[in-house]
Image (spheres, rainbow, N blue to C red):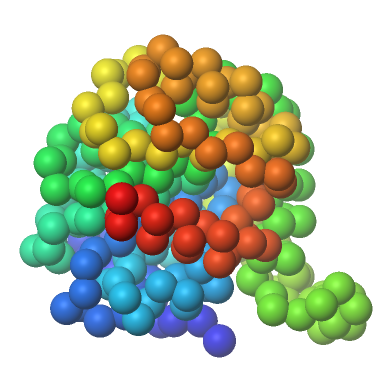
Length: 253
């Protein structure tokens, strides 16, 4: 059901990733958010894999990727992931970051000139008003729904095994990382935006990154391409084709 994981060692750290599409196609890199998973993007990558070569980075401390250093800031993540992307020896055409992954993507973009489109999905570039417990619960609920292609009745019937074997085990083996993420909830992004192809996407029902914070940051940083979706923090797991259309539209304009 899922693509096999590969890994590269960068600065003595294993980075696991999934890849979709032909290596001859333009490169898209996805950085998921805290307490999320590369598997949640299966349907999104499937819809674009004929046109692009897509790399889904498994965040440090998630799944099989090595844990991060406790002293790391988003800048440290960005520096290592930038070196990781360079190993593919291809121009980076699209960089997508969600939530904390959006913060990393933003820092990463400031050191690259080859990005044609930077798409930030509810990036955590201002203080996050949510408890760690609620963040964990949000992850479990959305991950459960996001990696299935079943309707709700089928989810109730077939989903229990998947939920307990995959999601709870994944969360349990990374509990130290989960706790360390608490420190990032107060992070505010201060670096100047240098990429003029930024698309900021917020969601009306997002209780983690409110749309107000998205619009304020866009105004402060003079970002003109803002999209507000009728959904929650993880809307694109349930509407993968909509996100794919946004990517294609930005590349064609």
